[in-house]
Amino acid sequence: MSKLRILLADDHETVREGLKLIINAQMDMEVCGEAGDGQAAVKSARELQPDVVVMDVTMPEVNGLEATQKLKQLNPQIKILTLTRHTDDGYLKELLRAGANGYVLKQSASSELLRAIRAVAAGGNYLDPTIAGRVIGGYAKKPFSTQNQNTISEREMEVLRQIAWGYSNKEIAAMLSISVKTVEAHKANAMRKLDMSNRIDIVRYAILQGWLQDN
Figure 1 (spheres, rainbow, N blue to C red):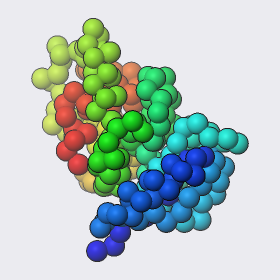
Figure 2 (figure 1 turned 135 degrees about the horizontal axis):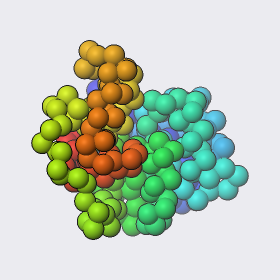
Figure 3 (figure 1 turned 90 degrees about the vertical axis):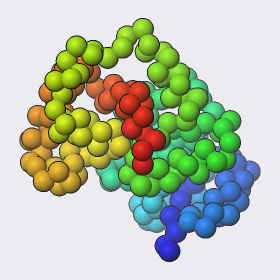
C-alpha cells in the first residue's frame, strides 16, 4: 500500500519534529519534506508534489495564508490542511477563501490531525470539531432559508456536497457526466434557494448536514 506523502510547514523545528514522529508512526502516511516558512513551503510543494501540505498560519517571510493562496493558484488540486493555534473566525474565513481544505487546532488531540489528513487526502474538507461547533453556533441566529429547501433537486444537492468536499466545477462535471455550465447553474440555483452568498456558506451548510464527516 502506497503511503500518503505529507509536507510539514511550520517555523518551529520542535513542532515539526513532534508532528513527524506522529505521522511517520502511521502505517498509511509519511513525512516527505519540511519547510520553515511560507516561501519554502511553496517551493517544496512544487518540487515534492506531496499528497497533503500541513500548513501553519503564522510563519516568517510568507505566512500560511499567503502560501496557501500561492499554492492554490499554481495548483488548484493541491490539498492544504491548516494547523494552527488561532481560533479566531477571521482566520478560518480567510483560509477558506484562499482554498484551504481543512483547519485543525494545535490544541486538539493528535488523532484529530490524523483524521483530518486522511479526510483531506481523500478529497474532502475537514474542520476541527471545536471550530465547527462554533461556526454552527455563531450562525444559529441566522439560519439558512428552509422555505425552499424541499424544492432543491437531488442533483443540486449533490453539486453542493461536492463543492463542500473541495472539488472544482470541472471535477464535479466529470464525476456527474454533465457540463461545467450545468454545474454552475445547479450551484447558483441551490445557493439562491438557500439564501447563500459564497463558498463559506456552503461549508457551513455542509457542517450542519454532516457532509464533512462522510469522507
